[in-house]
Length: 113
Length: 108
Image (cartoon, rainbow over all chains, first blue to last red; front, side, top):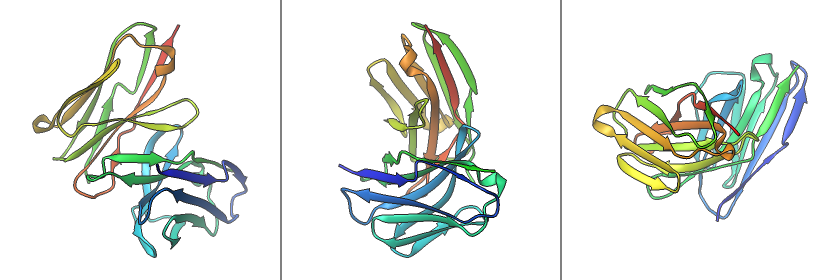
């Protein structure tokens, strides 16, 4: 079965510092992967999604970027963090014939000070 | 884009009580799912229910696609049911759009 790994689990970063969050998946190939952010403990906002290596779709214009360097690796980055980037970042794998099954990573809790 | 509204935003229940959570959406969808996020942040799939009714133990869900709403029923609630319940919708292969959730607290 599919497994999603995310690291780090928690992160405290100063404003203006860079960011790199990594998501790797096991048990599947050519997965559809998504980055969501949950701020203030409510609501999941879609940030990026990828249907394959090098293919990134952005849903929100921000100081964040994403990359898909390998089939089972999805990276979220920033060159300069803002206070508003704080939140809980989830990597999600979508599977099933109709995309009816979501596998969620354990998440990264980011605090920007 | 499609809008998803969940109600109520917060709900406090005594253990053993029943509850109904609602999800309204603004456009036709062919994918609707309910999720539970536990207090530690982990999300779990509950139902894939673009239409009709499904039941799983004390939980059941009904979606009336023509009227653009879905209901999640929790019966005989337990403290372990606490957390945030999300409804998410989509069409085709478009990414799911999540509602803001209903935060449920079940008190012993």
